[in-house]
Amino acid sequence: MVFCLDPSSRGIGRSISSAPSLFTPSVRAGIGIDADDFRLSPTASSDRFSFHLLRPDSPLIAGYWSLRRSIFCEEQHVFEQSDRDELDRIACPIAALHHDCQPDEDKQGPESQVVGVVRIVETEPRLWYGGRLGVHSDFRRHNQIGKGLIWKAVTTANGWGCDRFMAMVQIQNVRFFRRLHWASIEELEIRGIRHHLMQADLNYYAPSRERRPSCSLLPSLAA
Image (cartoon, rainbow, N blue to C red; front, side, top):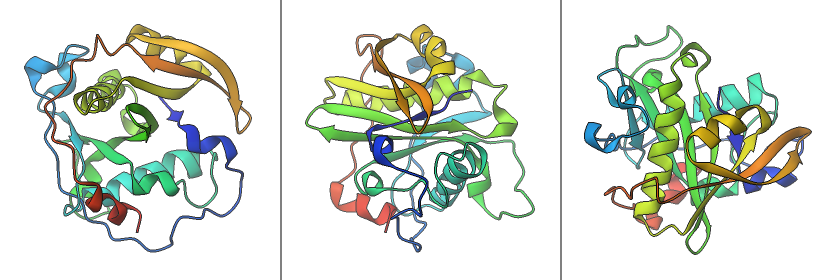
């Protein structure tokens, strides 16, 4: 299973998150990966799963936040009450959707379809990081979800003028990333968990045609 963090996680301890307690769950569904543009795992863009850049004005963001919290707070205990931080104000969220799943009894609406998450953020000009990558525990047997999220993340940033795409990858997932054309830069420890700083081979990840959202829309994602 894939889990990874990003630069903001280095200095975060087990304390109450500085993220606001209230937010507006509004995101527009994005455009999934075209089947002929998905080389890593064609089944990942089947009728069952699709991968979307989330924009303001769709309820899918509620499922995105919920799954992130479930993985990184309740399951892995990397954070306590919330994994949201200042990078969420400039990051672009991406979700994997399962189109056959039925809403959970504790959930209503399309947010229950979110089975995978990742965010991408430009930390300095043309340098991008992927982070908060995870898949719902009920769907981890489907390796194509993790591959699809990685593909969507890197190809999207590459289409926006990325020169380097990096991620902090937990040690158990390094081989998985290497098979997907990533190279290890250095090993480090974050929150007591061994990670590798890894870099994607952008020659392998063809730039997508996904339109970059206006920065003026992004603060609402964490507001």
